[in-house]
Length: 466
Image 1 (tube, rainbow, N blue to C red):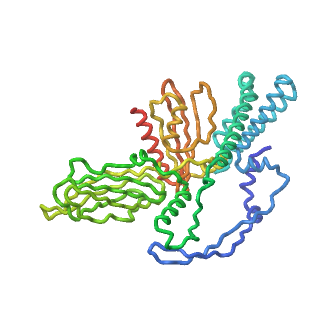
Image 2: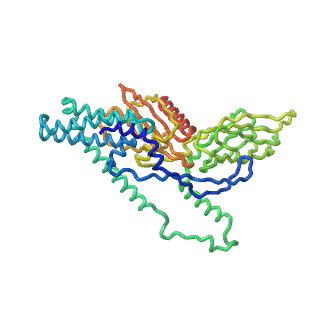
């Protein structure tokens, strides 16, 4: 003690730090890049690395970490010392001189930590959670009534909850290891095919396609073929039943691209010449392959294929028209198609990470979308299950038997096929017969934060309408 003088001395000692820090230029790295106009260019980059002189070893490690801005560690240390004093108070009583002396010393440390946290700037400033936790410990030490009310919670319930958390993590690790061991890779009598050992005349195109398709499916993490009901869920009607041309499409998502299988039916008694489907996209979607034009006879049908590349995890839309030459006039006939939504749920998958990595990403990601809770669900656990199921995310917060608790806070995490991280924090409370609160979404890009927010808003309203 104190902590503030060290932080002020740190601001006034910039010259000494500049002397102890020296920059070393690394070897140049050269690479060839493609410019916007398609030409090639050579880039040479130098990386500046800092060599920091050895710091003073006499300063304790805990003090270094606290002054560096790790106030979560400081709050945890204050909570641990508070529990030690509570145990001493329980054994020796409130009037013991040693207990009072330790309580006063801990209060002085708490005041110094709060003063240092408020005096700091930028990333080293104390966060609100750590401030509230340290303030709570100070109130427990100073108020005998509050100490009696929360003593059993801090000494017994917190330890029981922590033990239950450790057991849950061990059980999850064992279940994951057991699933990996019991996973069936291949049957004992399955035939092993070596393409390199087969002759070209023996190895046909079908074998190549099968082998390549299986390899791509395993590499993408999708070794399960979608069932018929899932395929029907991705069929969209493009025109009305009263239009001369009926069209519908089936969307198949292949990780980085979308394949549209468009069925066009001529419902007239005339031949439609030069019929084609013209498509346009909104969002990070790019039409790669345009459908060809065909002549469709009376009451005949034709299938069109369109390939669309996806460059980021974002909700997009596909618009289009059916154009064909009319036999009665010189102008072409145009039929507008219904919009085809591209859902973000097709590109994100549940993932897991540690709490430290989650907090680091939450602090680094700059895009945040805050959605208010508006639902008719009256139970907070049921609402959380509905959000997890609707957003295809993984709940990182362990869930135990909470009894009749009326509030809930949980962290959800998912990862897209493009390597983008999506973080969701659900904080809800049951007020009367209604669930209220907010859902905060954070991501590195704006598109994924807005798309998940729109998805959550839609599923809330759809569940409320039910």
